[in-house]
Image (tube, rainbow, N blue to C red):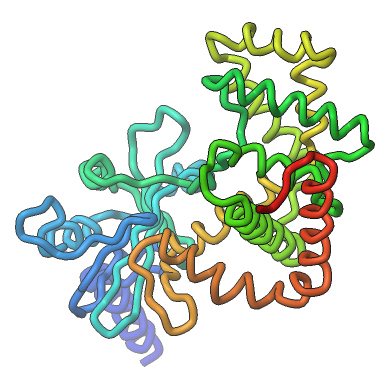
Length: 351
């Protein structure tokens, strides 16, 4: 009797094992990717939204989905060595019920030739090389860049000379490019718009609007944890300097500084706080882009079609309302002081 029970129990265990093998019973991390049976109305690759089209590589998305479902879990031998690095591509499937699902495609190392894909739960799959054709057919970037129109322009020597002269004149008056005293920045912006033939007061208002927007973005960024550290600021300025100094005619422009009794490096240090504002805003801008490329395309109730629209309404609906008190109590008085200084000390009226 006892032997019969043991035989029956052994048979039952073997049956369970065989059933597990034949039905694909495995741990959660070994499952293949399965896409829900829903209509995909859009696929977003980083910041680029793509709609179904029979005439494009993406077609009706079915081929992409089929390929995605064929990737396999990492081999046990490489599980500890494959990790998603800083540069990766976010592919978000957007379904007709407004739900979404994101996947992270990446290669290992700068010269990696194998593609991997990671799901939102952190599971990594191999054999994702099919993504290469989609990667090469789309304009995708890892990070967006806020472009400044106040960076050093090596193609305009007269403007450069004017900026150097203005900077040294302000320094003689003990006025620096500060973020708590906007006189120097106001004068710089007026100089940048010197060729503008609009009535002077319109130029002044344009400068006030631009500085107001920059300072509100900077203030919001600082208040929300996007300040650049001293180390980050130095790294960003060094990278910018490297680009500028690599220009074929940089030596010619460096002579302008020497003729004025200063150097390019000294000038850059004088502009350090202005650079701090630029790179802090850029840090906020890039953080917003990361939100967008990871599938968050909504500002309030508004769905944005691209990142430019997302950034615009992020400023209008989030940043500027949050800085209203700062604008009224601090920023407007600073701009009033800066405008009055410019009109009085630099001899330009507001006709």
